[in-house]
Amino acid sequence: MNLSDSKTLVNLMRAFAGESQARNRYTFAAGICKQQKLHLLEAVFNFTADQEKEHAEIFYNHMKELSGSNITIDGAYPVDITNEVSDLLRRAEHNELEEFETVYPDFAKTAEEEGFPAVAHSFREIAKIEQTHAKRFAWLAQALEEGTLYAGSAKQAWMCLNCGYIVNVMSVPARCPVCDHDQGYFVPLALAPYSSEQMMP
Image 1 (tube, rainbow, N blue to C red):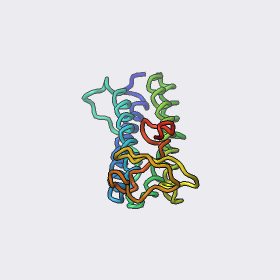
Image 2: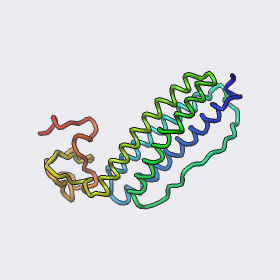
Image 3: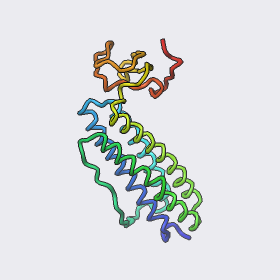
Image 4: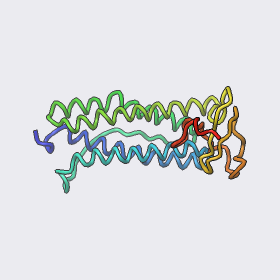
C-alpha cells in the first residue's frame, strides 16, 4: 500500500498535530508554574515539552515522501486551560495515558497491517515514553496535592536547581541559603539532573 492512500498517513498527521499541541500546552503550563514560583514543575513541563517536540518530528519525518502535500484530518484535542497546577498535571497525566493505552497502540496496529513496520515501531516505542510522562505527572500531582513536593516524612537530600546547593532535611527552607531563590527551585537529590545521593558532601 502507498502511504498516500493509507489510514497510517492520517494517523501520522493526527499524531503530529497531537504532539505539537501537547508541546504548546506544556509550555503554557510551565508559564503558569513560573508565575506561581513552582520552578521544579516549570522545569518538568518544559522538559516534557521538548520530548513532545521530538515525538512530533519523528512522526513528521515519516511523511517525508509527501513533502509539498496538504493532508486533511479530523480529530479531537484537549483544551486544558486552568491556573490550578494540580489540575494541569492531572490532565496531562490523563492525556499521556490515553496515548499509551489506546491511541498509539491502535495506530501501530493499523500501520503494521498496512505494511509500515517502521511507523508501527515509532508508535509503539513512543507510547511507552508517554506512559513514563504520565507516571511523572501523576507523582508530581500527588506530591503537590499532599503537600509533599518540598517536604518528606524523613530527612533526605534536596538540591537547589538554581545554584546546586544540597541540604539534608525533612522540609526544604523557604529560600535557598546560598542563592536566595525560593523553595520552588528545590528537588529531591535523587531526582536532580545528573545527580545521586552518593554526591552528598
